[in-house]
Amino acid sequence: MFIKATIADNPYLHETEYERSLAALPEATRNALLLGRWDCFEGAVFSEFDHRVHTCEPFKIPDEWPMYRSADDGFAEPFCAHWYAMDKCHNRLYVTDEIYQRGLLPEQSCYKKFS
Image 1 (cartoon, rainbow, N blue to C red):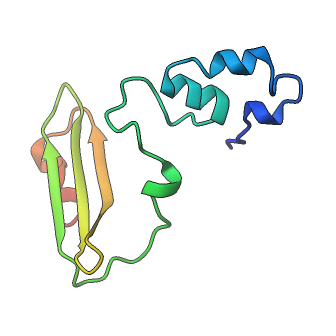
Image 2 (cartoon, rainbow, N blue to C red; image 1 turned 90 degrees about the horizontal axis):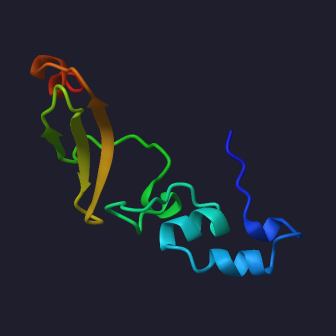
């Protein structure tokens, strides 16, 4: 279980020189240490990713939504595949499933989700 705590929750550190020194750190480190954002890290491709904004509770995908799949082959390096559902009404693409694993043969990978 993850219990979020920020520096503001600590009366001994909040509004101190230590907190001000953290504010000068690179963005990802600053977000982690000041805001408790441990999903941030230096070098992230999508540094703006916010779990509260970019995810949703699971729901049944309507049958009429088109489904798509993308894949990046890999055996020694991880194979990665994502499945998407397109909500054309709201112009939104939902990631519905993924595989991220080493050592998969092609017949073990993309076809196992919707076959």
